[in-house]
Amino acid sequence: MDPPMSLGPLRPSPLVEQAAAHLREQITSGQWQVGAKIPGETTLAKELGVGRSTVREAIRALAGAGLVRARQGAGVFVIATEPDEDWTTRLRRASVADVYEIRMMIEIRAAELAAERRTDDDLAELDQALEARNTAAASAPDEEFVDSDIALHRAAVQAAHNPLLTDLFDQFAPVLREGLLDLVRLIDARSADADHGREAHAALVDAIRDQDAVAAGEVIAAELRRTVSHLAADG
Image (cartoon, rainbow, N blue to C red; front, side):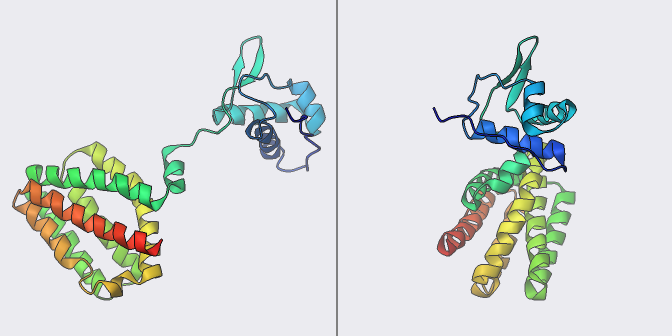
């Protein structure tokens, strides 16, 4: 085992953040392994050149990240070497390919359910969203075009009348937006596709209107696969 890493003194500000970063490094580097008891507050405060209250707050931050846990009367122990990440953070770190695999699972099933469950209000929203997308595709800036595209897809997901599916899509939306903007800009996707996906998106709305679940699922699957193929070609 390598000798313990020297912690070293800290700059005056921001002390808690610096202390937490130094302690986290001891864990992620393997100096303090899972199951190990970390030094006490007094020892850490002396090594880091800060007060015990600063060390205490830094340890709380590590506990909040799922790296350490206090045991009553025994001390603080390392329980993980990688911090917990919330869903939004994990999405931001995920590859576009991984995001699109999950997106296809969500949207294909949502389109099928939308065809079975859509209401007249849903159809009105879909028609409005489709018209807005067609208008934006003609001459709007890339940001507006991408936003209108996502809004149409969201309207289709919402027509499934499963709030969990809608919530999932909403969590994916910011990542999808950035990925689509990058795609549009990097490969000039709007020029490469003179139709801008107009026919495919109109076919999706028509399938939902006709309550044709099979067609709705097939249309959205083909459209998303087309986007994935652009991503693969760019990669």
